[in-house]
Length: 207
Length: 287
Image (cartoon, rainbow over all chains, first blue to last red; front, side):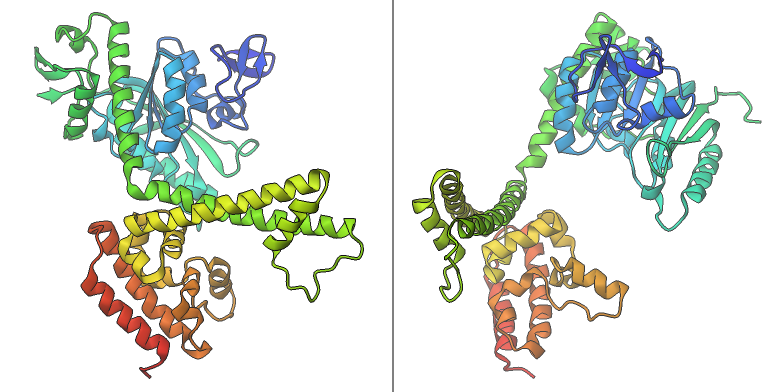
């Protein structure tokens, strides 16, 4: 990841959402973007120029625009028409951004469009957040990585965030994903956690 | 065989897909893929398929298709007749708030300028006062009052439009409770589809959120009515029968909303019977 001093930045055309510029680079604010918060609070996944990314829950294209600055191509899935209008505007100016208007919990809707990817970023805040990620793992190449942004309050408000966190991790492990990193983003976003996992290559033992 | 956006791939063979981005987008939306044993596409197949010549061409063709598909989809979602009505009602409610707030503010300001002025015993409605201030007030005060007056005129026009549009979009609900109130119900529910999915008991207390949650949390009595209080049969009914009228009206509204969503045309047989029932309760013919 590119940092100027302690500040996380990305190189690309600015002015997407009024972000600050620093020495010609776009400042990636951890208080606005949960992915940026992960890079501050933990390690995350190093974004490289050759990467292909499937981004679920792209919303207005704020975080997506930063990811697109780093990687080869981003497939950005968003369901609601109002944020989609903004996302299309961002995608018009970023040639490596493929906007897909579909429901992330129904990957069969966009299966004919998406190739195998190196990274899946799941930021759809739904009660079945983890299940959505697991369903989309069909697009993840063996050995590829996935990041789940867990909004514990969207999963179940009656349970404590810690309980939801534990249960989600157990659920992902049961689905055959190996948990690489799990961190709370509390200093930036309340009751949010990030879980990074890896999909095992076919034939490699899970033990 | 797997169908992808650029064509159908079967082993080494590939049948490219003809047509421009719009036609392809339409076809992709009609595809029914199953995720069991799904193999993600390999973009190199698109070259085998002679759909594209390079990685750049691949991405630019795919992007063109995705833009076309998204634009189609957005247009369809906005084409629902209730989408614009929703914005209209919310604008109307916003204007009401602003007009009331500014009228009061202008009156207070006027009072400070004229120490002998008082509204006591005059019963001057706010809009009449605002008009007189806009005619006589000097400087910024007069200008603000004039703006409030014009805003009020725009509000009246908008209210008429909302009512007329509601009569088209939700004919049955509007016939029972009036276009404006019908539109407000729809706005509170978040659209015609969500409204048609609400049970009558929820429609009865739409707009009485504070009272409802106070009831759920404490021992306070449950609200009898929300927005539907604006119906004359509800607010004119004697206090002890209001709950009963509100309940019956809400029940009929729930049916009306479903008729509006699924049929979209007025259903006279239903309307006559519903009206009769509500009227008889309101007049107290029935015990």
